[in-house]
Amino acid sequence: MHKALLTFSNNETLELCEGQLVTLISKHIDNDDKVSASPSETYELWNHSSAAMIPSVCEFLCRCDFFHLIDDDNKVYNSKAVVTIQNI
Image 1: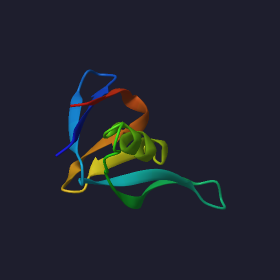
Image 2: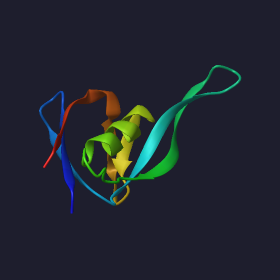
Image 3: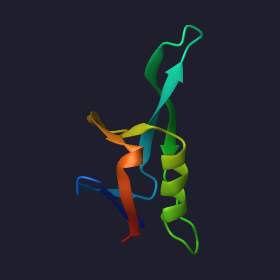
Image 4: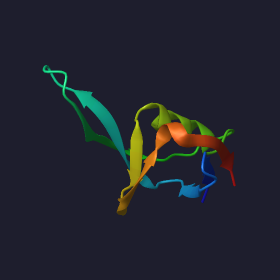
C-alpha cells in the first residue's frame, strides 16, 4: 500500500494511505456575506503510477480550506499549513 507523509508548519506529521477517505471542509459565503464552514465532499486518496501519492494529496489540498480523516472527526487539519508532502 502506498503512503504519503504530510508535515505541517508546527512540525506535526500525518501519514495518509492509498484508498483512505478524507472529508474536505470549505468556506461558504451566503448571499448576506455570512461565512460558514461546511463539509464539501469526501475524497478517496489514490496512487499515481509514477508520482505515487503526491498528485492525489496535492489535488485534495487544493480543493479545501480544512480537512479531517473520515474515521476521526475530532481533529481538523488546515490544508494551507502543509509544508511538505513526501512519498514513503
